[in-house]
Length: 166
Image 1 (cartoon, rainbow, N blue to C red):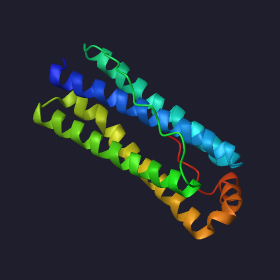
Image 2 (image 1 turned 90 degrees about the vertical axis):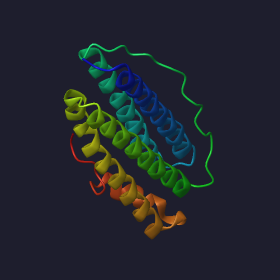
Image 3 (image 1 turned 135 degrees about the vertical axis):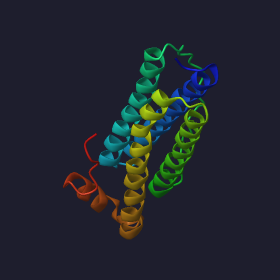
């Protein structure tokens, strides 16, 4: 049911999602090292979510008769100069993933692969949410400034900036 080209592209996306998961986990621990435990918890949750995306793609590949092939993921960056730099990197990462998902949608369209095209719609919608979440967080950090990040954490714990249910 799935072409070799699409199977390969989806396997690559699994690794992109696992790479994003690894990046978020490394950032989470740096936030915790900085004493920003709410940011740390949020980024651990984001890491889990990205891993979930990878598994969702892997399950789809199997559902359509493809073969899941995992590859190595790059080592994540160990440190960032500031909390804001981490969120900026996270936003850039989400923008990269959006481009990758869009490329998959284009491939599904070109191949007239309606099953994969339908499956990928969820990811297109998810990326809108992912980019908005990081963009909103970055905006809050810029307003608060480096010395007031605990206020941003407080706002996050009071329900502001919450992600919508999936």
